[in-house]
Length: 480
Image (cartoon, rainbow, N blue to C red; front, side, top):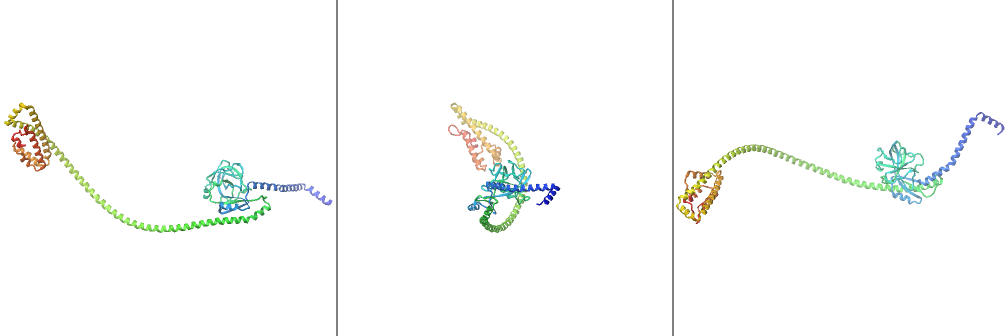
């Protein structure tokens, strides 16, 4: 640079010193920033290398909509390039917090791949515990209980527990930057994540598989990228085999279910036909039963009407019978009064008859000379005994006559012949009427024999003496 150029440069700097200083400062800052970036890049890479190796960030991730089972994982683990392979499952859900609803991804905790860095608290130990994102799970602290919104899908609510208690906060190697990913629910953007034990989820198969490779590689290096690219086809082929096997199993199960469904359908169709036949038979039988029921109902109504008529007739007969009973009761009471009056007269006459009978015995004794002589002779030997026997005979005879009179009185209301006999005795006035003549007037054989036996007993009690011969007068014996 010649002197002229230096002079011109000096004049320009002097005229625009502020601009010159600004340009100089900007240039210095840019150089310093560039130098800092160039110096910190190895530090960033080293930090990331440490984090990914310490917590075993995956090298391959296999997703399958048909599902992944333990057999598929074992096949991948058998590959020589595989260090570890684990199955995992996740659900996107809406959780309720004190600051509103958050859309989070609920992961199952894995071992050996994608392990968590615990920043605060502890790891879950039971199915109702969880750990949450240390950075972006806002409004929730350790000890809080996370519940899920009713707006989640039914499958999601069925797969997860009703609630989880937060026991820790973590960093995950799956989330190295500030973005948490996208989702098909809510506004389409994930706000945070959380981890739970696999046994706290209800699932039939894994939806993803994480694979860690053998060897120590520097991340972001060309060698690592080349190594991963060389294994991509191998893992794709393995994934295709497992997926195809899974697909075949699902198709086989579906075909089996289809065959069973077709068989069930055929059986159901046959049952439907049988049911229609049974329905037709039932309708026909119902019609027959209906006709029979209507006929029976008509007969029942006829019987009811007949019964009603009989009830009315019976009611009238009952009224007539009650009236007849009332008349009969009145007649009975009237006859009872007459009977009681006649009984009183009869008892009075009986007393008179007994008194007259005693007088008759005494008179007959005085008239009979033989009886008087015998009494005079026997009085000296056994006067007391004769009087006792005479008194006993008279008493028994009186009782027999009384019982006879009662029997005759009970027979009086039913047999007019007995009345005729009594009237005849009263009208005849003959004290020596023959007993057979009187008894022949009674047509009832049983009564006649009873009277004959009674009179015989009386005759024996009154007429027998000590020598077995009758001591009564002939007139009295003839009467009895």
